[in-house]
Image (cartoon, rainbow, N blue to C red; front, side):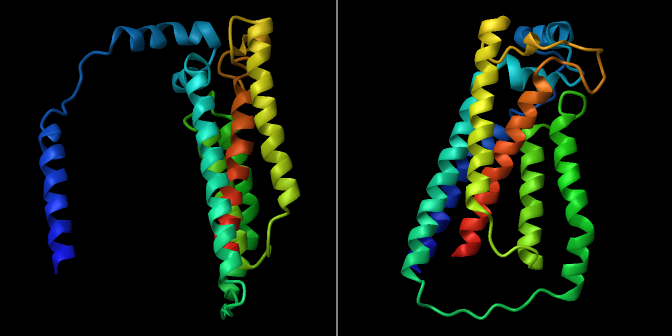
Length: 230
């Protein structure tokens, strides 16, 4: 009873903090000077049809690198936690029901489409909404479906670690090439800019997003495998 009481008090406290902020939300009829510069100069600077991509990958590329690093730290922490829990409960026996025929059949049809769609999302991130994080999560969802359907029993940890490490190293290497051959870290203009709106355009942005997608996909898959193992 006391626990519920304090829970309600805590909820009321946070509600009193956040509800007044809702009244401050309103439509904006203009953008900041920085956002205006992004909108006006983004196409000429990086040749990306999706201006959000230019902001995320290049204008604030260091922030994106930090986000990928945080995800890596979270994945490593989760794997360590569940490894310890798995060792504690390794003598326990659990009954696992086999996947249904519908799930197995549906997985055989959907898995190739899911992986292709994930790759499509991060390869076309400079043209349409999407990118490395979204495509990587879609690929990880395919791994989750494969576990549910019994298509795979466990991941090849050596292969997943290699993909994650190679993608991360290549991501930083592309950033350094931007310093050496272009105007700064993660500057994509050291590769040909191509024709605006085409797949092979926007310099190294498609390459960067592909590396992010592979890294995020492998890290999320590792998290799924750690939870599944427990």
